[in-house]
Image (tube, rainbow, N blue to C red; front, side, top):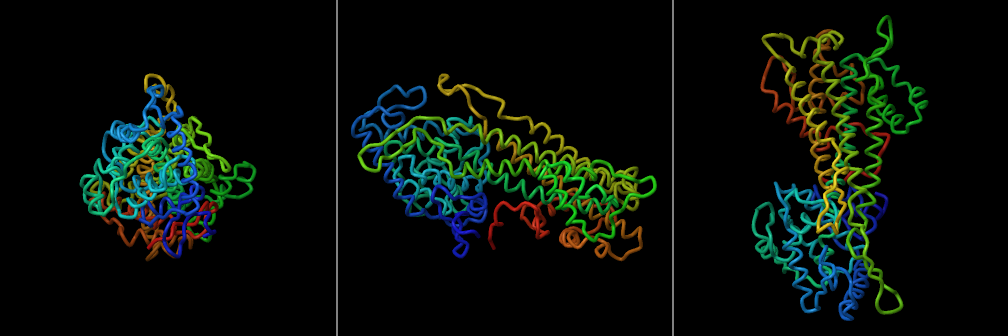
Length: 538
């Protein structure tokens, strides 16, 4: 898999964190597939070096933010050495103010992994045991209960990360092997001792962007799969509507100079290659509507957004985002302890708003293709609402209705969170990113879009079966392109042709599961853009 650059040892199905090589695929492996994690020995040495700087500063009673002072507006309050442990515990308790429903366990596992990896860089001044204890939680399947609301995105994700830290010190609540209990009981059942925090360690655990980064990593991974799902769905719809292939001519797309558009057109040509159902321009039918003709332009723009966000998130996975930062001297005692603002989530906030907009556009075009299939004035001869006995049967009428509702909801959710800011901490923290709100919205948009694409896939398979009936074929499979025939086949293994009305939501949910489980997005072997190897899991 390219060596340690992906932080995965595939043969052992484990992830090694070293603070510099964690990948999005590795995050998915731990968060969703529960790969075990361990700490690289070199990272321990770096952490120990920065820890000695902290201990030197405390011993010498240097005035350093978060080490010998209070936090936020209380940065001018000096804390004695004997009160430091209490200071760190108070910080965790007072900052655990999250609200709302808890994050899904996969998000919390990703948050813990990212926080451990950031500390492993060796510029945060914590003891190696802090990271080891976080990894114990991951490996023993202890998942802190973390409410999803309450972060301003600067000074990082204070409230969500505090709920994780609560469990580390034997407080709060957690899931242990799926059962909800107190944090203290979860640690006890896993035979893990509560962590007693020392100087700087409480601050280092909660001062960072790991909630928005965790959401961002899982969301951009899903967005890439969504691009592939939507493009695959568009290929089935293209055939169901007898689309004209001239619009995919590579010469057109090369003239646009947009790399992602060129790649999207290439992906669609591969999906449609050797289909017997596509058309050439002839007579008065010289071009398709935008929903078909402009798939490369729209999907390509969305792919470009996904690529950009992938780059931003990938950098953040190995970033140090707490404050202050520790820079050890190699040859003499002491070092530099510098206050800065790496906890500010603006890079992720802007990118995740962009990701949400891109995912929303995939849904917009998918719904328009769905509308063309169910509308008898636009469907090139398909029966109204894709049902044989219309009137008695409503067919796919309300499938499109439901898709339109999700698309409209996406439009509301696509309003950027990153343009907002509310000062906090008595105006000490006077500009914040709202990055975690942007991340949560992007995740919801992606889920909505996945459902819209599932509806298009269902409608396309129904439309293709109706085409077979019109043409007099026993099956449509032999007329489909070789790349889309397996896609059609997989869907038909879970959802049969609708000869008459039936309850529709189980059919939609079944295809959504195929998309969520990465079964359909990976149907085509070659995609134009493959940033990382697909996560290996059983």
